[in-house]
Amino acid sequence: MEKRPQTTLILAMTADGKIADKQRSAARFGSIADKNHLEKQIALADGVIFGAGTLRAYGTSLSITNPELLQWRQEQQKPLQPVHIVGSASGKFDSQLKFFSQPIPRWLITTEIGAKLWQHKPEFERVLVIESPNTKPNPSHWEVTLNRLKQLGINKLAILGGGELVASLFQENLIDELWLTVCPLILGGQNSPTPVAGIGFFQSQGIKLQLLEVIQIEQEVFLHYLTAECGPGIPLEQNN
Ligand SMILES: NC(=O)c1ccc[n+]([C@@H]2O[C@H](COP(=O)([O-])OP(=O)(O)OC[C@H]3O[C@@H](n4cnc5c(N)ncnc54)[C@H](OP(=O)(O)O)[C@@H]3O)[C@@H](O)[C@H]2O)c1
Image 1 (cartoon, helix red, strand yellow):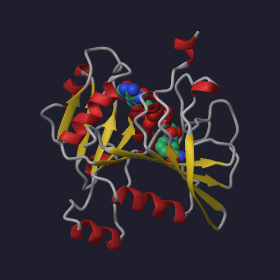
Image 2 (cartoon, rainbow, N blue to C red):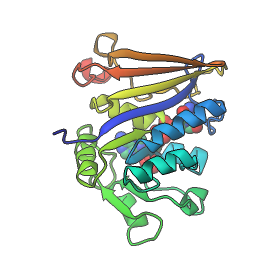
Image 3 (cartoon, protein in one colour):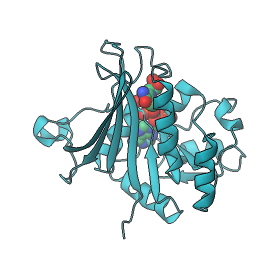
């Protein structure tokens, strides 16, 4: 049996491969069909995870409201909403964000320092510490963390971005599937984030994908990929 949850990354990007504009504001360029697609993927999951940058940009998370999806979860004897998990080394974000009044279970994955800000408070049902003080988790910590999530009942995890969190997970080869929605828009600019941030991989070490499905709905294209088993990508600086 797998030690970690099965993981699916779901992102919308522009035709020039950007997931947000140059101000890193919340990405609202997807259509209703894209929102429905995201909600369906969230409904399939026991937990969804996103980076603190995404939380700061949106201030909220997408809960399931579609009655058919809610009924499906009930029939599957799943809680109506998956757990919404924030990844944040600093633990620094505003407790007044709308996210904290949404009727969803919330967990935090953070460092010891970040945990001090939220432990024994009502905002997060669970605070998981994955690293020593002051530092971001080192490369092998996400695997340990995902194993812990599986022990806590998260068998299927939806990864909702942003690029920095996604880069950390790709670096450890922890993403099994991808759904990328290509939206009919160009944003351009070096400062506009892309699906995978970090320092990047050499071409020879890039994460290889297998295309499973291509679905067109009006002006958008939904690309469904499987990641091929190719070992962890080696970051550029370790190759120098
Ligand atoms: N188009 C889309 O589908 C989509 C989806 C999601 C997000 N977005 C966009 O993406 C942008 C945000 O992306 P982003 O790359 O800036 O931020 P992000 O990946 O959402 O979050 C980055 C933050 O998450 C935490 N984090 C990331 N990797 C970590 C690691 N390995 N260990 C511990 N903490 C880690 C850190 O939090 P701390 O700073 O607290 O330490 C880091 O600053 C926004 O503009 C948003 O609109 C677009």
